[in-house]
Every structure is written in C-alpha cells, then in structure tokens.
Length: 176
Image (cartoon, rainbow, N blue to C red; front, side, top):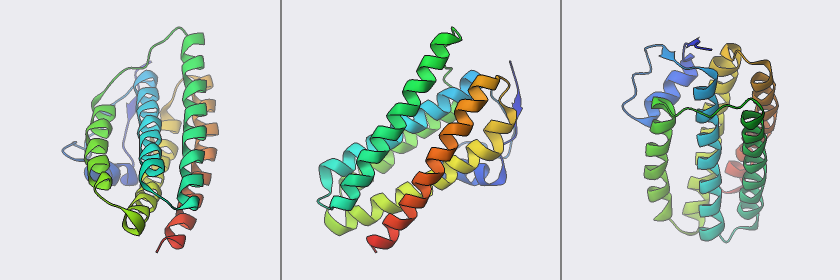
C-alpha cells in the first residue's frame, strides 16, 4: 500500500509555512499515513474552534467555531469507523507531527489575543488553514490514495472543507 506522494506546489508552500520540513523532496506516504495527517488536521481545527469559543464574544465567530467542531468531528468519526472496518490503524508520520508541533505555536499565539484582534486572527487562520489543507488533500493526497473507500471519504470530506474555506473567507471580511 506504499505510494509516492509528491507534495504539490501549494502543499509545499503549506509545509514550508509549518516549519523545518523538507517540502521539496517527495514524501513516501501510504494511505494510513495520509489518513493520520487528515485526522490530525481535523483535530487541530477542532482545537482552534474550542479556543474561539473560549476567547471570542462574537456570535458569528461562535457559530463558525461550532460548525468546525461539528463537521470535523463527524468526518473523524467516519474515518475511525472506516479504519475499524478495514482493521487498520492510522500511522503517525513527519507531516502529522509537523502539523501538531506548529499548531501549538499558533494556539499559543492566538491565546494571547482578545476581542476584535483575536477574531481577525482566528478568521484569517481558518481561511489560510483550509486553503492549504484543501489544496494538499485535493492535489497531493486524493490522486495518490490507493484504497477506494478511503479515497471516497477524502473526496466527501474535501467538499465539506471547501465549504468551510468559503465560510472562513466570509468571516475574514466580517471581522476586518
């Protein structure tokens, strides 16, 4: 089930923004490693949303954050159910580790902000995060996933997360 996944140009930019990952080299990621990256990315966005619920007083930010929690949790539950059906476990890897590490930096930074400043930073982060992850999923992961059921889950999730990207773009405009 090994595949060679070449990180697309936007994926490379995303990885470079995350820290010291060699994004210009191809990464050997199998379906289970790709699944773990997606699971971690969903959990990170859930953490960002919980932070928004705790720090923002803006009802629109709260509504958006609740949507992020609901949708990312649902996709992760579907992923875990599929892994159980396939009798497989997601596999940690350099990309999921880098995502985790860099999310801590972003959470620490955002946790220091309040009011409109927090709302702007949260909305901008959500837009950038969804753009980068969506591009990586669409252009690097989906074309290289070997298991058809895993691929369908990623395609379905991508539709949801592209809607999140559009919603995040509207949030950025609202909180300018």
